[in-house]
Structure formats: structure tokens, C-alpha cells
Length: 306
Image 1 (tube, rainbow, N blue to C red):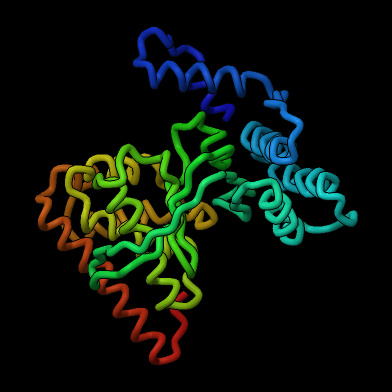
Image 2: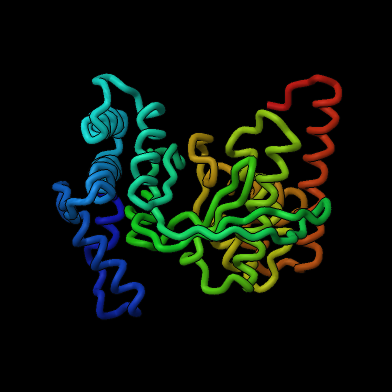
């Protein structure tokens, strides 16, 4: 966040469109001071969210203190839940989920990337939908989530410019409905349904996949099907690359781009933006299917793949 604040320091909001103005104004107001400003609210869900938001704020303002901030989160959440002193986060989170449920809320805890997560929503509807993947069609159970109190830490830290559009478990896909302009559009069909259904398939088919490996395979699905959203998908991959497997999306983005550039004999990832679309789709499919064949062969032979 200190780096982000430096970048927006001299930006003139009047020169931006409405979305840009809102973003710059929000970042400045929320993070100009290292002091956290609580949104307030006396309900249990409000108090729980305030504890997490204080943790998120401190963690992005002072990344080197992230571990200490998580320990503070653990202590404060334990007090809110009247838990025994010393109770760890993995034990506190199920208690928090039950308390929120008792107050009419669904929730997600755990870890997203580098930070502990808290998403809270009020509405959830279930449907079974067909989804095309490179190795065939699947019928996926999808939970459509709406009525959000919290979209999670990435939404908080970026003033809504970045946040998860959903996730997959062994049982179902969970779609964050407000993050999509249309549930009939390519972004939802490919970048959510295709991406997350590949996770769903992989978790059932291959055991022990690392988080970045799951993301690597799912991002290949996006490249295999993205048409009108190709520039958006590739732009997201190119802008967010990393060398730390602890940040699985960034690490997978770099791995996907590197493999595709190599496979298609290109100079750089930017060339993928204008490369023949049909050949790009075919290459992404083949990379994924080759990866599947290698993993299947290794599992059959009893050889670890990671």
C-alpha cells in the first residue's frame, strides 16, 4: 500500500473517469493514514468484520508485520467469540461461521493468498449447469451468492477494483454474483464457470495439487475459450505476475504466459494479444491436456508429481 499511495499521490482525479476518480479518492481516504478507521456498527457481524478490516489495513500498510497482525487478529477474534485464550485461527473460524449463520449470514473464512479471509453474504441460490472444458462437458453445482456485507480482503485493499469472482470446493462452485455484469456473458461463462469447474474436476481427479498448480490449469482453460474477453484475460495475467508460489494466482500467471510464449515461439507475452485466436485456443488446450496426461501417467506409476 505505501507503494500504491506513492503512485496515486500526484494523480489529478479530475483527469480520470468516474471509476478512476472513485478509486483514487477511496485509496487516499482509506489508507492515507496508518491509523485504521472502523466503519462502525454494533451487530455481531459488524464487530467481526471490523476486527478483520483492522488486520487487513495493518497488513497492507506494513507488510513486514503481517505475521504479527495475524496473531493480533487471532487474539481479538478469540475475545469476540469468548474462546479459551490461545485458541488458534483454524479452531476459531468454524465458531465464527456458526455465529454468523445464527445471525442470518453465510460466510467464507480461511486464507486467500497471503491474508486471512472473511467474506459475508446474505443470499444463496443453487443451480446445476453444463460447463464445457477442454476434456469434455461437466455438469457443475453452482451456488449463486448475493447480498454481500464483505467481499473479502482484496476488495477492501483495492477499493473494489479487485476481488474474487468465486471459488470451488469438492462439492460445488460458488459464484459472487455482483462481480459480473451478466451471468450470460463470456466473462462469467469462461473466467468463472470454466475456471472454477476445472478446479472442481482437478480436485476430484488429481490428489495433492498445489494451489498454484490448480490456478495454472484453470487459467489455461480461460485461454482455451476466451474470445471477446481475450484482451481482458491476458491483460490480467500480464499485469499480475509473481515468483512466489505463496501467491498462487500471480505465480500461475507467470507460468502460463511463459509456457504459451515458448509453445508458440513468440517474443513476449504481449504477442499473445494479437496472435491467431484459433491457434491460441488450440495451444492452450494442448498444454492442459498434456499436463493431464503426465499427471495421470505419474499417478498410475506411483510417482509424485510435485
